[in-house]
Image 1 (cartoon, rainbow, N blue to C red):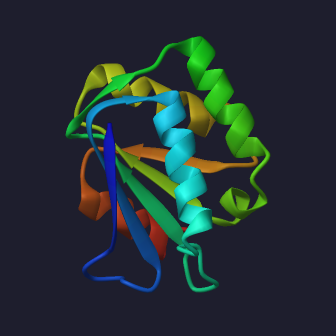
Image 2 (cartoon, helix red, strand yellow):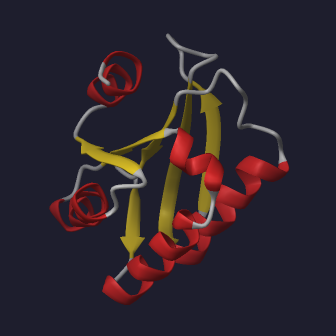
Length: 125
């Protein structure tokens, strides 16, 4: 598993992009959240994070999804951010859809493009 963080090219102070490659499991995603905090990548000006899953194979089932959501619920900094998830695979989009519908404390939304994800973070309430 691998992930890379980068500042968004148009909104570098407001949007952080996290790209996953290879096979990605729940513990990899949790590790990446911890990396975000450990490396002080969450700043006051950060409005949201785009997670790009379009180049990875997501290894997740409902049990591991619940583990991930449980972890996320306990991270207060995540409740302040918009969490956009870019998916290219119908098997992958089901998880951010469930997050959007069932987790009202977390602002999660799936997208098919990076542009739409950034626009939601920057311009929609």
